[in-house]
Image (tube, one colour):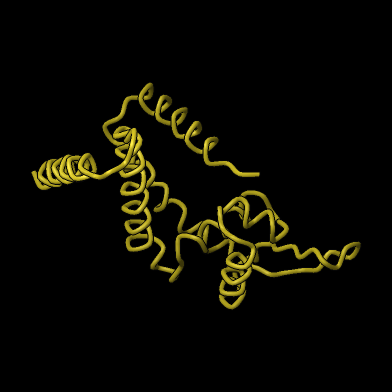
Length: 171
């Protein structure tokens, strides 16, 4: 019941927002683009808050710290710039988050012996233990995200989100 009320409230907010924007002096306003961007943003923010509150708080990790730890777990040692790219953050932000993960003993840095400008980061045993404890709960949140969608709807949404990501990709 509460979920339905929240859903109706969001639709009303979306309708009210679009109505307000129609009054703005903007030529060729694409209301669908606004609606899609707004819904993507709200969904992403809700997912992030849910995961940080319900799952990642166990280890006092931010979404970004978890993302980096996850990438190290999946891919092994990575260069700092690659970590930043995978996480969609600047190298400066990646470096700061890596420092935090290092303080927790979840990762370690090493300098490339051939090119001392390159810094590689690898997950530690403590980091593996943390991610392996967190990931099952994190994955529950991922599955809750798609609850009520058919497999076909999930595939369609995945394809559409990939198109959105491709549109945002900068080189």
